[in-house]
Each structure stands twice: as C-alpha cells, then as structure tokens.
Amino acid sequence: MRYPVEDFTAEERALLAPHFTNLERPVFALVNLPETVKGALFARYSRYSGTVRRLYLEEFAADAPGGGRPFDEDEGARAAQLYERVFAGYGDDSIAQLGGAHVACEWVSNILTKVLQRGRLAAYLEQSTRYIPYDKPLPGGGYRFYRDEELGPEFAAAMDEIFAIYSRSLAEVEEWAAARWPRGEEPEGAWRRSIRAKALDLLRGLLPAATLSHVGIYASGQAYEQLIMRLLASPLPEAREYGGMILAELKQVMPSFVSRVDRPERGGEWISYLERRREQTESWVARLGLDRRGAGDGAPSVELLHVEGSEEDLLASSLFESASAPETEVLARIDVLDREERAQLLAAVVGGRANRRYRPGRGFEALRYRFEIVSDYGAFRDLQRHRMLTCQWQRLSPDLGAGIPEEVREAGVGGEFERALEVSRGEFERLAEAGLAEQAPYALSLAYRIRYTLDLNAREAMHLIELRSGREGHPTYRAVAQAMHERIAAEHPGVAAAMSHVDSSVEPRLERIMSEIRTHRKRVSAGHSE
Image (cartoon, rainbow, N blue to C red; front, side, top):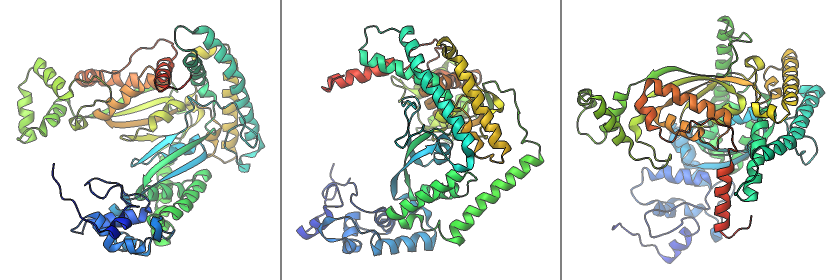
C-alpha cells in the first residue's frame, strides 16, 4: 500500500523524535507530551489541512524545552491558551476526550470503589478479594479496613472482631479444602494456589464493605471532570475527600482539563445541581413511602422485568449492514421464513464461535433486557464493573439478609461465620441510629444482599453471562449469570442458544485449578521455575 511520506529536515527530525514514535509511517503514537498538549494538538488538527507532525512543528515546538524533555508543568503556554479558547470559550467538550491520565486511588473502601467505577467511559482495575488474603495487618498496624474517628471506637472494635474471625477461619477452610480435594497429577504449586483461592472464595462474604482496596483508573479529561463532580456532590465523606485528592493530582498532570471544576459558576453550580437532584429524589421516595426498611422477602433472585425487541428485530438488524434495502423490507423478508430457516439465519449471523471472545455483530444490540437482581454484595461488586450496561443499585442494608455457603458449614466454620454476620449487622444498626446512614454500610459483610438492576443489550448479555458463568468464576455471581441465561432462554431461545459458552454446571469444585494449571504451563514454557 502506498501513502505519502513527509520529508523533514535534520533540525525538524530532532524536534519531532522525542515526541513521535516514528517519522515515516502514517500510524504513530504521541509520547513525552502533557495531556493538554496532546488534546490541543488534536483539537487544532481538526481544522488544519496538514499532518499532525507538521502542526506540532509550526505551532507547538516553540514551547518545548530543549533536549527533548517533556514540557514544563504549565503544559506549554500555547497549548493551554488553545485549549482554553476552544474548550472553555466555545464549549467544545469533545476536546476533553482527547487526553487521558492514569490515577491510582489506594486504601479506598469497597463502598467507594463502586462510586469510583460508576462512569462508563473509563477503564478500571481493582484489587480482588478472590486472590488477596486480608488476614495480615497494615504496615502501621491493624487490619485493613476504613477508619474514621466519626464512626467511634465501637466501629473499629467490631471490624477487628470480624477480621479476626476471617483470619482464623482462613487456615481452617484451607485445611478442609486440601482434604476435600487432595492433590492429583497437577503441579503442587497450582494445587496449593487453587486451595488458597477456594478458601478465599468461601470466606469473601465475611469481609466488611469497609475493607480497603486499591483502584487504578485510566480516563479522559471529560470522564475525570464528571467523576470529580460526582464525588464532591456525594453525601459520603470518604467520596468527597477522594474527589478533592483526585482533583489535586490531575491539576499537576492536566490542569486545563479540570479547570472548570473549581469555578463557582461552572463546577460549583454543577455540583449544587447534583446535590439538589439527589435531595429532591429522596424527598419523593419518602413521600411515596418507598424508603421503608425490610422491603422484599430477602431471598436471592433474578427477575427479567422488561424485554425490548424480538428475535426478528435482531435478525433484521444483523442483516442491515450487508443489505441494500430499508430495514422494513428486511423484516418483511424475514417474516416469510419458517422456524428452521430462521434458525439457520441466526446461526449464520452468529458464526462459528470457537472462543467466547468471538461475539456477533452489533445486530445483537437490537434486543434489550432489564433484570432486577437480589444477590450478595460480593457478586454485585463483580457484576457492577461491566461497562456496557446500565447498573442501578439501592443502598446496602441488612434487610435482605445474608447467605452462608454450605461448604463453609462443611468446613466447620459456619458458626463463626454467623457470629461475624451478627457483629456486622449490630454495628450497622448502631451507626444508623447514630445518624450516620451513609457510613453505616461500611459495617456490613459482603455476604449481605443488595437489590440492583442490570439493563443491557443481547450482545453485552452474551459477554457477561458467558464470562461470569465460567467454571473459574465465584459461585455467587455464577448463579446470577446462569439464572439470567435461563430467563433469556424462556423469552428468546435462539439468542440463548447462541450463548454457546455458558457453563451451567453447579457441582462443588476447585474453581481456580484449571487456571492455575494453565498459568503453571505458561511459566514452565517461559523458563520460569514454579
């Protein structure tokens, strides 16, 4: 393939080389540039007839320090001025999507992780309670839970007791699991890690929502602006504190992208709007009597509330891009097909899915499902992280009860698990009665249930259900994914059948053993010792 290649002088190449990964090919990356410079470059790019490398030379290189070093902390006067003129002056918010930053938020509660991860247009990574034991004290002493003097010494005492139960139970459950699933032909290291993973899975429900985690975020300037304002408008003190800290760090990396947050007439008004909206909504909830405690029977459940679209709509949408006819005509042609022909057509548009990562085209987005789910908070944490869906959840409380895994009872620690749940519930009630309704959920163990909705199209449903039903998944969210598949099958059997990588098995097992064996093989093939 032929494409134009620009000529640069030796002096120009010296200016470009530190900031562009190559100077000859039509595809390259921008490096060693502040986010505002990148954003301003691309913003100007949309109205510039030349190439971005030529644009850099003409309008930005003069701001660059000598020696190819990154720009200074004010991001380059020309870039900041351009950003201000286009973004703040003309209101072109799309420019705020052209720069991003990595931010780590450490020592955050499991309550706050869900607030941080609520935005769609960002990437998140969170420490997993399935892989990390929480039986060791922090560097400064004490177990790993959120601390605030406002919560009182009773809170710390209750959390200490729950973590002590968790720590003692971990060794007992590991010993039980090792006897229940003795080592076979698998490598010893893989077997031991799978035994540890089994114990962590079974005892995850003991951990309180105050358990501390680390969250890594990569997002655009626009996404960060929304996140910060949402945090600053939150009634949760921890959220407001982290909102301020994120803003302070982004001011060092990409100040122009978050400059509106501090302005009373922009960010100030926006935050006030979010606060008023929440207050008005809560007022109507109270007026309608929807704020009563103990609503619902508390049993785990997965209900399909609403379906939008039909399998015929899905087929028509799948054919649309390859057709040359209006969608109404496509639907009419599908209407005359018999059941067998429709099944053949659906199989063709789905294709041969040898791997669950092979997914059909966007025609599957013509169907939507809205589920209402009651599950333990641990399962909710994992399902909420899916980006391409709408997740709404109610405040965590003890009203929907909690479940104790049968295998925990088999391991002989069921009584200790129950005692931890009682301590957890008692501390929740104490905090709620003390007027700390927002902070009370910190006290609740992840085994307590929460009610939430997932609204998603059939394509995302395929991804979520196949991933979360996998044999290596946690049993609680596997059960939710399997139930979602059953509900879809009752409405659209063809769509459910297309989800060919759903694992419907329910027998007790070492969930992580196959993954650990695969990891072992990779390490051996790469020349690493066990």
